[in-house]
Image (tube, rainbow, N blue to C red; front, side, top):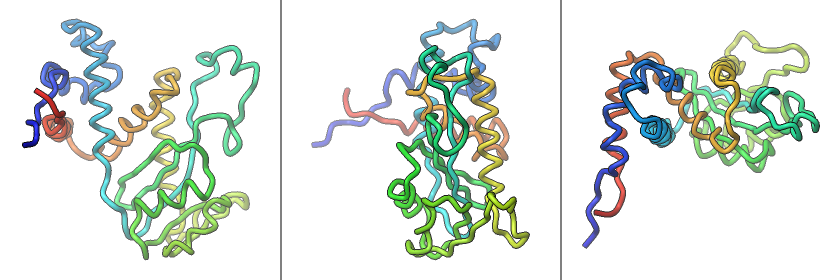
Length: 234
């Protein structure tokens, strides 16, 4: 007989915090409402909120989608001296953490931290998240060369030639808009630990995908996801 599924205590004890966490977000620790809770409880609630957001993955995309990659890393003042001495640069070839994203034209984004931006890494992610026969828009980065062989219509814009749209629907402006939003949110935090990037990415993907909902609706949706979290045990 299967063991019963129960709600973890750390979810139950933090439920009262989540409405404020959704409305105030990562700045909740500086919010006046935080004074009534121990810091350890706030940090635990933030952690499990982000973990829950990470599980709310968008359904398979179809139609016209955009694909692109970006790079995440803290500001110079937050880097260790060894990293500053080594140096860094922007864009492809940087030592920063690569992130791959797919944007559906209905305004929903999917994004994931990746080890590299080679075709062997990116093409399987496209196959996993995008239905075949869809139209995939990208720039001319070499890793996207094989998209058409995967069963997609492939449309390209050549940023190197100053092309950003063919004015017929071929562009990646929606995804670049999300990258801008993501980087503004991370910059406001002054840099974060590399091992926590995936959780912050999940948070801002979730917030972006739910941006058209009222805060009350977002809270209800997130509480529903939290209540569905279960672990084996007694």
